[in-house]
Length: 373
Ligand SMILES: *Cc1c(COP(=O)(O)O)cnc(C)c1O
Image (cartoon, rainbow, N blue to C red; front, side, top):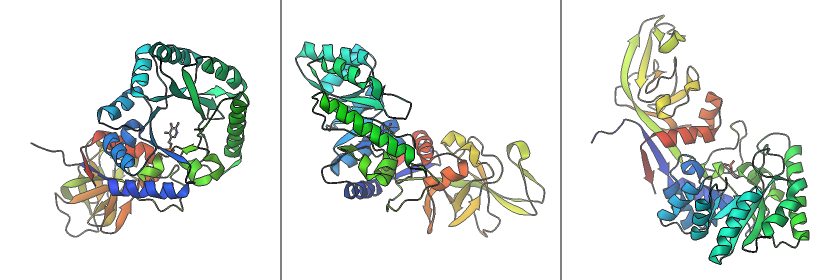
């Protein structure tokens, strides 16, 4: 069996550490829903979910029903919330059979779920999504009263809580987030005035958890902090989190290039004097951002070496002029640590002008993975 030269390594002890940091940060009564959508941000949803369950996570959150079903098939029994809702009557049946908790944002799906659960003589817990300023899924607060009346008209549905999402909690300015928190509070009050027993209200993503205590409500929904990333690469954190993902490849060839030799597609880099160039084994086809062209770094023999020229599909050139004995087969760390040097997801995100979420998803979903306890 031939393996590709590149490997994503997932450190579950770092995940457990990060979970504990968050657990200690929130009040004892606040539930934690670990967000494991998109294959746990590329980290592997089954192994990540198992580890979170083992360490006491209350719930898991996924985008789609298919992801929730995959968790159940792997024997994961905790409540799973489906953040992007459901589509068909068959979906409704699967939700009810598996006791998933769907997020509702329109009355049509409420009807589907209500009728289907009534037919089976069961009650189903649901969350109702309010748009407090994200401008994505949700019911505007002005229409919430009517929406809640039509959901609760189905006696087989129990609204266990309201949910909403922050748009800007990772940014410097606090005003808009504080407005979202106030709007959410008023939505919860409205629901309670209607006589609903709302016990699992939730608003905070990672940025909310870290930056806004009064956004925690009854449950928090961390994603990126569990994986050791920051909500925004430009913000640093006081939380002592550990990176969970590493991405390593190797040197394929080392070449001595004369002065003025163009490197890679488009000849966007030319050697300045004699330079030693390592051709490495990963490119954008392996999940490295193309935007690392001429701006990225990679660790070779403990040195932070510069990416030179454009990132190719499966190769990237790195300047190793200062390294005396680099050889083909040497380890290249694109993400992670080597001899005391580290490139974090946020370092890479900054260089690539993206966010660590994007880095983790693309590396994790494209590479062979090794998960270590
Ligand atoms: C993805 C997501 C989260 C987690 O966001 P992070 O910034 O990774 O903490 C929380 N809630 C919802 C609705 C999401 O879609």
